[in-house]
Image 1: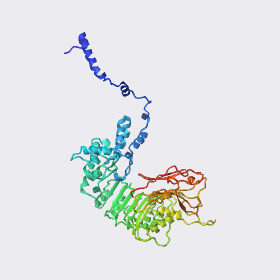
Image 2: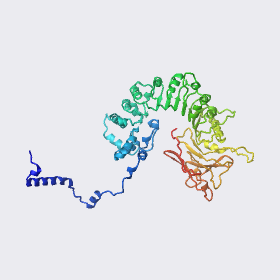
Image 3: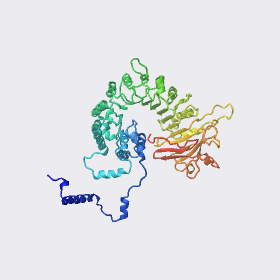
Image 4: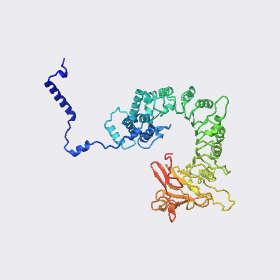
Length: 581
């Protein structure tokens, strides 16, 4: 046994001290740099800027900041991955949010909660890093390597299965199309440990009864009771009927496409879904007005916020009016979509609108082969409608006079009669429709003249032809109560208009730009822009003194048309035109 240190001889204690000093010198020893100025810069202490104020931020503010770092982390839409894109690079945003979670202990809980709430796996980086990573993958490529989204899905599966606390946070999973089609087993293993999952992008076979998706369906039915959206295509009749067993009672959105099912059984299925708010029917020829009839012993057709029909020819306007005769259904319906429904022609739209006093958005599209009858039709009337998609396409293009002309004239008459006072957005498939609004007939300047015809509210018109990809945006401001131009103090109502075909330099060069102003007789007049840069000017710029100074410009960029201007307190306007309709 060795002696205690206090019992060691002086020589031994001195030797031990030298050894300790030599060992500690290794931690203090630094190589002397050749450039002393550079050494001082490298080892300089950072400047003190006061205490860390981020420690005082509450979790609510931190969460809002992290949502700006990674916008798609707060995406709670029920759309598929390809239909719910966001600006920027989603992969880089998720990486930045992960770094925020590891920066401070205070931030971890908030950032991690967002990181696993809405998960989005993309196949590529939507930035310049994709070129770098693609080159690295080519250099390291081997015959059996998997593609990046498949690897990320496997990593996610391993993470949620090893940590069930993380799995309970997952509510939305969005995947590329090829990944969800080829990784059904990984999807099944992932959803089995995500009990609070509300939406996941599913393969097509899941919606048409494919046996290869049987395991995935069983896991989703047994482990995920909070699913919000489900689609049933042709071949999935048994799966639709299985909802009677109590699966997915939290369903909000239901899509039924080409499914052959008894109407009574359908009503029973819909009756066991208490939270259902949106139903879409497509290609179901068996469906007619009787589906809305009240039958003893069968639950009524549910009151919905959104109702959509596509190629359902047996549904008529009278049938929808009967459905809306129920006060609960009438007060609940906000959005109605009618696409290619032969049983609901344009002449029946006034019946539907009159029966839906709470309707906010109407999407109507059809193909016509004959003009409207000469008998006068009641105008489309609604005090609540704010958005109208009125897309009429002529079935034959060889006729001298298009049959769609009379249908758009009917829309013009409804607008000019003031029957749609709350309308703010209008989509039409006629590129010349905005110009027809300038052809309003003059009014009699007498005291017994009828009430002013024209617009009583600002209106944004989006128009395009059959051979165009983007919408042409026109913003029309109302005239005064007598149809005259505004005074110098109030400013002259105007809008900016841009078309895709050039009409000479006086119209702004390649893109047509004009100003639409009241003509003093209840109509509107298009005035070409005569400034050097081709941008339309306001009344202040058109007048000799330039008294107003309001400017309106229209820009067509990568994100669609954007209208910016100022008029009577409006600081900014931007359109939300869909460029891929």
